[in-house]
Image (cartoon, rainbow over all chains, first blue to last red; front, side):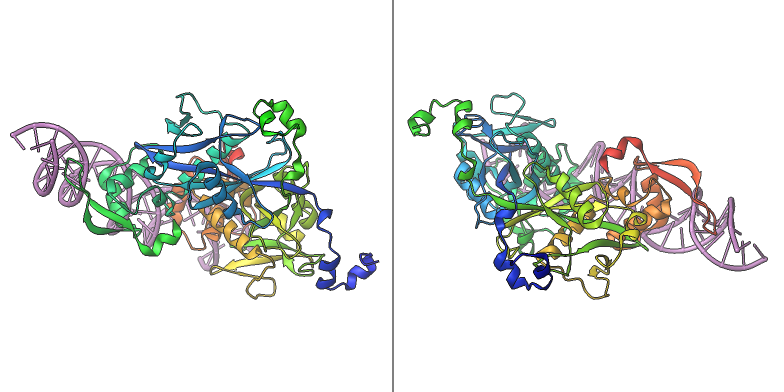
Length: 243
Length: 243
DNA sequence: TGAATAGTGTCTTTCAGACAATATTCT
DNA sequence: AGAATATTGTCTGAAAGACACTATTCA
């Protein structure tokens, strides 16, 4: 009798929650998949994990985990990084992917995340099961030099991540995650060029970024480079939350 | 014996899929929630639906539905528009929301969508259960004129939708969904001003948009306005997919 | 001293805002 | 004719690209 329409009309929220049956709604599997970007030798790169299970076992793919029932989405994305790549990285959600047939096992909705790390933190991770793909002339190439072809809809996820990264380059502070705490303007320009995929004018870039309000000089200088040392800059404290 | 580690090493993908148990992964409820934007009298507005069920029964909220097991995410978002607002609208996904405690019933992950419609299609929908909120000076106000306070995390979803809409204004064709097939440059400028929340320079706006490559003059003129008629423009055919 | 990059200056082009003049339609 | 907006033109200032020059460090 609890759920008859007549009763429902005067049901309190407390009553409703008590009789509510969660199983009445189709539950779906949800994963968090992570696109981990870095910039190596002036090129945008991403770190992929070899799958240890079917489907697509043995192939390189985006690291991902199923989201736990009591786990926030961001938390799951960070866990995917730790578990599948062995690195603790801040993550940022960008888009979700839920085509009915995107996974042969079952219906899986994937929440797309990206992580950005300086190459210093990514290089040591590379081994047989963790390999890099590199963007060159708008084409992703795998470690074998061939055009990258990821399983599931992971190629689309990577494309969407790149589009999102590019869209935010001039308005957000995300790209600073690709640099270490202190960086030169040359390194910052290389990051921008890697993301945009085209060269930038040096004086204009310097003026624009220095006057952007995002960064400040540290007073310290680069060392050990065999040429004139550049000043080291850092992201202003007030923008650390916007990274 | 099927799933012992030893056997797993030589298991084919076919074998794996056969023994795979979907119930091994925690399933979550997934909804598609829609932020329906329109521009009315030069102000960005959104159409909310009064909830007919607990929780938050009787309050205005974003229209949403649970995603079916065999339903694409976009499909679910369109169904939410039809079911809760009575309108068939194209939708675009922008971000997902999955805080563990965002819904008192159970763990629900919401895929955030936005729909953009010209006011001509939205005005007739307004009734007791479908009401407008309006953005003014960066504050959303409900139909009662008071600051909007939506249930669940819907205020955050609306804020994220607006941020996304603004971020894409100059690079995408989304905003043309807020206009009818043919529109004047004045109407286009009003849409841009409503989204940005600040006035724009007329000659500069006209030059920029006409030379943007997105629109073309139709040759036809506006009528029945009591002043000099403006030329009607339209989105170029080649950009209809980018809306 | 030479190589290599840092950092700056100048010129030009492009673009947006301010302001205003002219054009067109309806009442 | 007057009201109201369309459309265009001019001036100005800000910002970016092209190019080049000077500065500084290490080998």
